[in-house]
Image 1 (cartoon, rainbow, N blue to C red):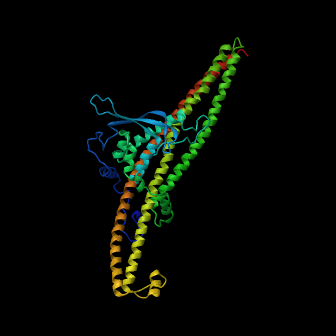
Image 2: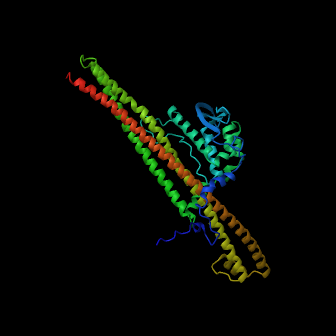
Image 3: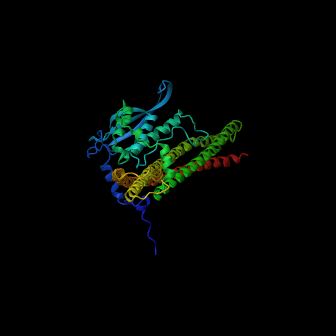
Length: 454
């Protein structure tokens, strides 16, 4: 007979507190509930207003990248890349898209937007930005962040980031995100006025909570382990792919030397000249085909890199949960301490090895009036502590419910995206092998015909 699984609602309790609800309850309705309560909710007609817009009605694209020079905060000249963001409305009767807004943004402004979203939506797996500097490079790729090929791949990644945010049922309704797409001037000042930097949790506090929390939620521990494993596996896969790309690139390019040999050989042969010239041509085609092949592979590698960076977004949700759990435990511990002090004052029992016991021995017993005043003060603090503990408990329950709903959404998205990417990669490899096989079959037929003259 199977044993019943332990109630996950008890995993959060540092003391006999009000239990937390199971995150799986009501998952199907969570998106609708969260969307209804999202910040800056606009009208429900789906049109693009200051507070609400939908991907079904709006097209977002990062269409261009431009190298610029300017002054930084230290008044020093710097070179950077700006990206043109265009939004188009497709709500017209003729079905044609109409350009509504276009503006230029730097990569640092994308970072500012994401940092803001991380602070205001800690329960959401916020989409990651593409790499700022090239990682997992191989021989042909440049590690320079101003390299045109790298800038183009990052442009595609930034566009994908905006589409991820715009397709999220909660993030798409944020006013700051809307202004990011429509307000070029003073956008940074608008973000800073929200004071999100002051609300951000410090790394030291998060690290302290990680090691000092007593009753961590097993589900979030497993999620953290999963994110670590996901990052490790994808990193290893990308490193292996970079080594294979290096080796494959060398193998293909060697055939370019064979092509030159056959072309030069054809010049001194009479009967076999045409066949050798054709063989040299096939070798050159084969050698040059690797550039397009690896360029297509780089597209799939970038898709894997996106989920490599998603692992850190998952860990950010886990860290926020640990901080909330730690605050809950500290509030419960403080409340228990005040209750014990009040009980000791009411009964007159004093522990010898305590601060109260030492002060009693040094300064003598308190007067009844002093004791009553202290009891009254402690009772007020206990009431405040109980309200605070209840508030933190409810806040924790809501965070778990909302976070788990978004994690389930992320898992569905991840499974779909990686499945599509791997299938497309397999189809691309099959097509590549067919082309290579056709080229070699043509080459062998030429060699057979040329062999008659040897």
